[in-house]
Image 1 (tube, one colour):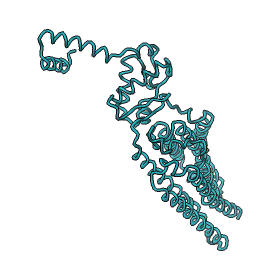
Image 2: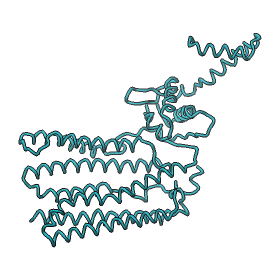
Image 3: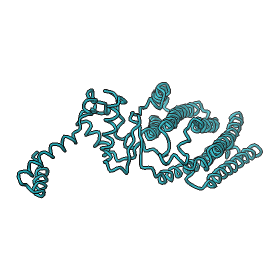
Image 4: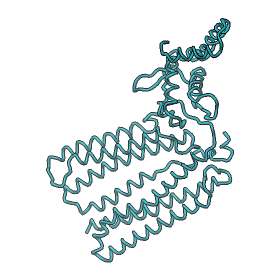
Length: 280
Length: 126
């Protein structure tokens, strides 16, 4: 009963956080940009007609509203109808997948916008920093070494846990999965550090600011994933598998909270999108 | 320290890069021992082919303006400031000018000089 109540609370939190609070924050951010840097003064920021951006904001808001309503409905049904609880346990994962779809859609749209921006960029001059970028320029040594320590501790934990010989335990397969994820996170950081500049107007300072934020998010997500793996194994060993849906829902919320951490938008240089900036 | 290249300029891109790095050294923006960005980083930042940047680095290394320390990357050469003042292109032009005028004085025609020059360059003996 306790695990069910905990899960219901976590599930409600998941809906409120991922489909209401964060979308609201993102919509506010969009509105701030649209109002502070309108197409009249910052035409390079909008390679497509302005209406399409307003439409994007509207659709994003609507999609999240529908998903939140669906989630809340499922939660109410599970409370009224006891048999629905089991269905709800399995739903947390699928709801999460549906919840992040609008965010992925916005991200995909931004990528397309940047591509369009690059194709419309008519400047013939290109600038670059003559200083090499290093890992510790984008990441604090403290966070980096903490991430490494958590990763190594996971190896030790798995090696220690193998002695109990649980039939469900995957052994070093867990390390393989965590290592794969960490390689993926590291390659994203490296790609942001050394890869092609996606936004042709972005200043080097802004690029570093964005990369710094991304690198810390990747490290924090890596730590969260590893800790979640430890919690899952521990719950299984303790015979408390019923608590797993609750742990999973909390984990999703932590991941989303970490992933949508954003930099202060007012620190970014928006002058590069002014109409006269193209001439330079 | 920023460098700028113009993709529409008649000056080759690698030559622009060489000139800007030499300028950075001469103005003291880059001091002996200072690290330089990797070929990949610079190529991606300037949206150039990495072979273009590699060619610029190779020529700078030949002129002892930079030095490559294996996997650790490229650094400004200890004598970079003096070496960046040496213009090999100017030297080549000067030497060729005197050689060509001497040949012309001896009665050689333009096409004879061109054919001989191409043959020597293609033979690979020099």
